[in-house]
Length: 121
Image 1 (cartoon, rainbow, N blue to C red):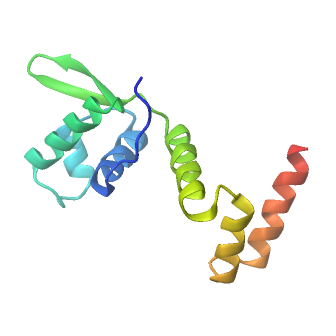
Image 2: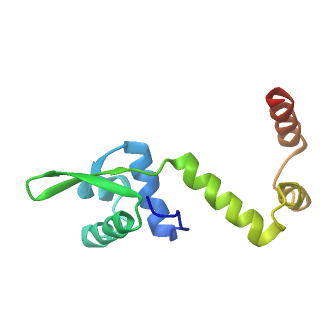
Image 3: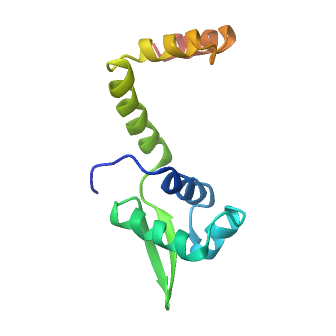
């Protein structure tokens, strides 16, 4: 598998559908996106995801049923690591502090995080 790279917003949207459905034809992806995109657009995005090593497919005649080969958690971890390095000098402490200062995380959220950390140790 190729190194994971950051996907575009549209690619992430399509991957979210594939992670949810686990496997799908392009028409099913289009349907799940509730008509926001044209079939040909989604088909192109899926092929780009295949080129990037995120999806593969099973052939049924001329149709392809696509499925993710990169797990959501692996991609999320990679993106969070990249963002941590890019914006917070690689420090998750700095990242959490940022969200606390921006009031995007509550005291209860922080307490829950601390509880998770305590239970991991």
